[in-house]
Length: 112
Length: 113
Picture (cartoon, each protein chain N blue to C red):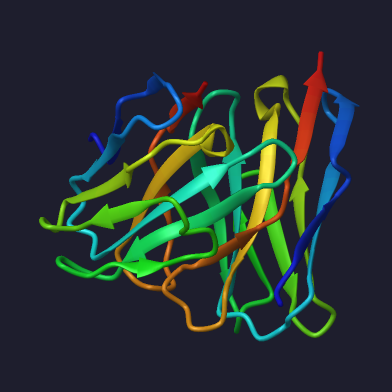
């Protein structure tokens, strides 16, 4: 029972470098989401997808891009990392658009 | 704009106490409300989901209530145990659904033996 798996779990980048976070779910969920969590600010939605081939902006999309080429995968990309993007990133998925959310264990990103 | 507030920010109680965590939201037009648990360095685990038509949901020692008209929800934990120590977050969807959730900052609970 893998559920939602995120890779990598930890990453350190230098300002200006690029990277991609991978989220994979094995529950056949239609909806997938990327959140970031910062101290004292709760979780904020970056981008989300309502199905294969679709993506949409969330609350804090600037500086990030996403792709959902396969139903089970949702990729989050940083083209030119900035220190303000130092955070813990969480992927989540759900079967229904107003149903229970299942989260991955998070990816801790540090941008120097 | 929907805002979610959780009080208190932190709580420390002795084992065995019954306790209440509070969540308030500014826009009462919500589809549902979810309570999550987060252990240090881990992801979020959904505890309870209350649909807008429901007043409460129960799971084991946990009971969550929802009062949409007053914009409040409470999470009641009965007979607390050290294993309940974690951060508890509540979240409501932005209008339009799709689980575009707005989260509170959480209540950090410590249950000591």
